Length: 540
Image (cartoon, rainbow, N blue to C red; front, top):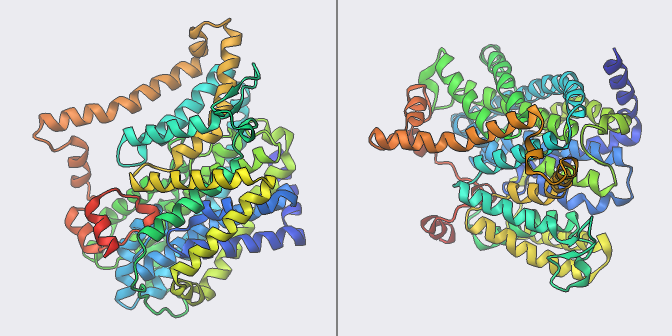
């Protein structure tokens, strides 16, 4: 009952005219950046961080949440019409969605994606309301050793599952931790990694880091791989669904939601795995398996529901534990830190009005997105015709202006350029972005908990596993790191075909031939490949 009362108070705050306006602005911006390949909600939120300095915290968060959810919606549009996923989580949607569009069923594909996203987002937010308070109660009972272990788990799992290799993932994490250490030691007061450069004494501003890595790095990467031929889109009418389409879509929506929310809430989070599992499941359960690979509506409905349900799940660890599991959540967490709000379990206790207004706005944002996406789909499709040079020139301008406005220091512009080149290098050599961003944000928090653990144990390293929860988490970390090695050894023993790959193939996973038939054109920002052959194709 207490949770329901708090949620009603959150609705009272979220339904004020000013917050409704920011929710509307957020969902419109989010849909727009989701439609445009290579931009994404994380870059949009990073670019808007400087703008929100003088705004109310709740209004800013509501707008950011609208951008986040809107980005999930918009990504399906470019996947279906252009066969170019705006985010890696919409790759699966493109497999069947673009085939439906080429067969003259673009409106049905967009409709099932929009309605499925609404259903999954609403159910996922309801689960967030139910689960988050219990997670908070559990987290408050934890000591510093357990909380440090949870942070290590988040860093290790996200790093281990992203990118083309664990080595590259941990390299990106190391860079992020190093950037997070720049500045003055909070205990001794000594400067760290400043190299005698006075402006770095206070550390690198998270706004400058986020804008540089996402916006500047992406713009430089796009400029280096810009295709001169404009992309051709498929015309689309007003999205609609027939009776048979509804019949074939509603079960995949629910199953996709069941896959998406739990995976989004895990420290290793993300929407890539649940969308893939949803696709495989729908292929096995479908009464029309012959349509898969040629435009099956179930292959759009299930993965899109999983994608949006995982977005709601991602907010559970972010709000309850202070641990982001994707780039957009990481930037939103950086915003809270920038506003002087301590993220973590005490957030629900110290800032209940803020948290519940944000959660209530998710229900409102989902409804606004459905009302906007169904009638305005043809308008969103026209955004794909914007010339990329104009688009990214504007992004560079606003990124530079926003970074300079944070502290009004010329030094920030040099840092912006330097870190932007780092972002470009990450993309060039296939290093994932998220571990670096998490390292910058979670690194200082983990250092604080590490020092508390050592203080409690009088400097004994055994203090790190002095609590049962910490011991359990370290065992989980060891298992997660060892499983791929064990599977690889088994694969070599069986002639190079890993048991995991064989199992997926037997379970109806996507074959290499099917993937080739989809002719997916990943955006440069989502691909981030260092393959020389692909670079040659891009340049041509």
